Image 1 (cartoon, rainbow, N blue to C red):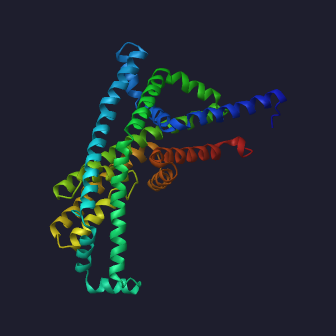
Image 2 (cartoon, rainbow, N blue to C red):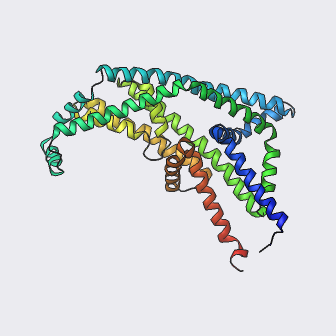
Image 3 (cartoon, rainbow, N blue to C red):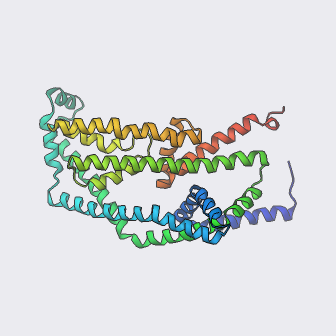
Length: 352
């Protein structure tokens, strides 16, 4: 093992300290920096095409790329967010004024239950229907109100969101313009042999592009389809639930079914048979088909990750890192698999 001299060791210690200090300084804008890097990687082909079309003028190409991203991504998201806040406020008001009464809804469900279902409740010592009704009604109301409050709070923090977006776009301009130089310097600084760095960096870029591209497209499709059927069936706040289903669809396999499934069951139990059957069939054959068909094509095919690894890494990433985890989780999983593949195939680690 190589032994470092005192000056070398001191410099490495200093390097570690200033690196940690630098990341600490960036911590308040970690989300903006993270998504700036992600957008730079995802839209790098767009910037390259613009750079070529504009005759190798990096500043103009970067500005035009930012303008297109604002028009194609930022503005539509802002409009959807504004509409979602309006519907969340309306749903919140309907809950408080009693127009949406979970107590009445639960009574309908209990009244429609067959005798054997009541027997099951009794077997699990849930015979006090009134108490169970009170708990479940209160829980449903709390969940709905929490969802509405979160959307309203999101609207009240528009200034913080605007600052983060500004920082992200400012950083994105320089990442577009100087991205190749920065990535080359990072690759050179990483203390690994070239035969290890290339596959790891390639995996990193491929997984980010595939994860964002695949998950976002699947989320948009499932959210739009779910909102459309809720609007058709006259469910209150269809846009609000469309956005919630879009976020939940970031979780492979389960996702949007967490929302439309209980609604379909409620329709069936309370006697709205055609609404329940339509929603159940639509959820399985249309919304579910989007997840089962598009996600493996857009995510698993490019990342070469098994479906169960995509599922576990996405759920684990979102549990640890919040919304950013739907990108961070699969990236870590892909780097884990790539690193172990390199280790398993490297002769110097096995004495061969």
